[in-house]
Image (cartoon, rainbow, N blue to C red):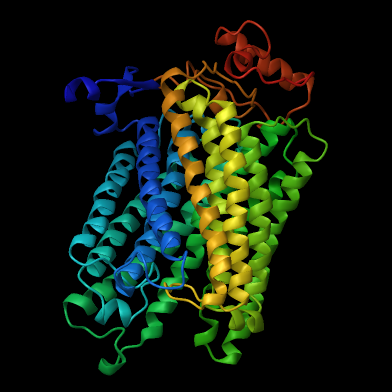
Length: 571
């Protein structure tokens, strides 16, 4: 029975030998970037469910101002410690890598990543690292939050804290190996005729992300090494009694972790650029500025880390970091205005991918605005370690990164599986997720200003009404995720056939079959001169040629087979 289940085909997915992928293939070693991309995606979704379940337990506990669900404060500390760590290091970052692995070689017209074996090795470090972290629950889970500040993380937490640090070490090595692979692939494997400024913006986003990973992650590795030595070897790097400094950890950790925000957000930026242009049938507005702003974020992001430590700095040290915190908003603002220029006057198709892209745009702007507020020293000192900060974090990383990842799932699912996700279920997912997300995290700003501290299970009774609203909305948000998962399960098996190019897109991943063959392309692919050059007779003729080449005999035939979406005239 187990053998027959393992042999079940997974939709239209193919191995590097062109055979249909089975469950057994996804559990085994493969050097095909497409299989590895799917492995990343499935693994990340599993950890998303785990991290989301922990979030639901947190909100259940906070329905009342007293301890109800948890036996004690330490148990509650473990909940939010693992929730934050799993969501960041085992969901958002690996899911961005999933899209990068599957899409980047296709967008470059390459047959695979530059180092296929290294690509597989980087992935296979993630499942054991995640398992090892969760295994710490049984020996005493980490209780110091995802930031793990000493002395709490060095002196007062159980052995699971050490396992937490070792797990992050493995995840960091995985990220570095993957980033090196992306940089070499993008730099050396572009086809003839594709210069730097002919690359799709998703490739630019992955390149900027990879540069940040290579530059920043070794700092986290160093800090984790010192933390482990303090815990198991009796050193005192972070112990003032032994000559150490607790602020040393904060400086090193945030020197990695603020750039890590862009490790999580930049892939979503790249996805949004692809989705907004394709689904509004408009050339991207300000292509070069969007591309260069990604690189600017990669550089300036290293100058702002200490705004996480305003309360620990002397007044004179706060000022330069307040200035850089304001400056970092500029390249992000360039992207937002360029995206608005892209959809302005476009023939918008209200697909699920487009809805989540627009949801990303609105929610990320709110997160950016309250981020600038937090960059202001007087305001930050007032709301430091309150739910205002929790709200900002989630507007950026859920309303931003996760909504962007959802848009990418709906956009590229047809390419990965050869089948369309159900649009009605997709729109139901959005209808549940968008308002429930807002009602979960926007009231946190009000509660934070009123004095609701983060990371506590017991709070002032007068704040209960806000926490009840937040918890109820969060439960709806959690339910919305299962709509997506159900949609994926039924669509991968019985969704409508997508055709090669259901969105009539111009970037190169759509110039091959869905799913692609073992070598990605039949013959040598020739990129269209402008991956966002919609609205011209030349681009329309190119798209018609692609459809006829793959057996779709009329313009838009693949699209009609998928979801009967309207194809704008002239494109």
